[in-house]
Image 1 (tube, rainbow, N blue to C red):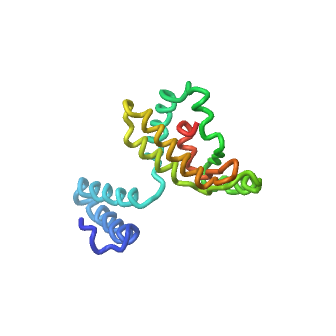
Image 2 (image 1 turned 120 degrees about the vertical axis):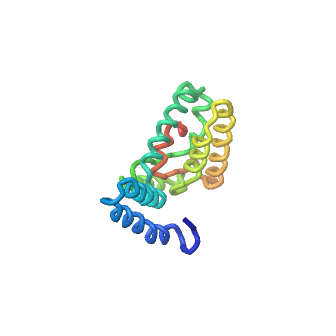
Image 3 (image 1 turned 45 degrees about the vertical axis):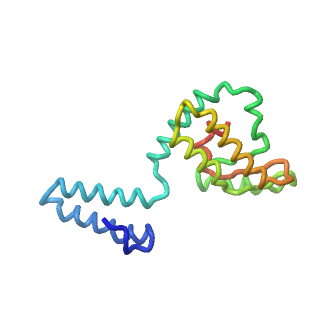
Length: 175
């Protein structure tokens, strides 16, 4: 199906998704395999449009647990001290993370970086291209890039807050 003619993903969604489900309903009694095909296409449109995909989260969580157990559960004290100036506020969305951030950031020694996407994006790349042979180098690069970015934001403050609630998915890598 051509992508032309749509302004954006939502425009495509509102025009294509009802068509697929309409065709699925039409074929319901006439051709079951065609009906299932159109239901499948309609559901794919929904999955492309929604931000939250629990299947991706489940896959990432499993990969992170494996990575943590294999590479970090026995980390040296020097490695454990890296990033000690970072405060991660994690949790489910709408669970009070913003209130906790506001309280902590009222301290003169702490600056809030807000909901930083840096770790989220860097970790996603690392996990999606996971290679045991090159993991240590990639993890070192991820750590160095993230700390460099947050040090820039931290400036002269002693501590920085990263309050992206979804960072709970990456606690193994954060630790």
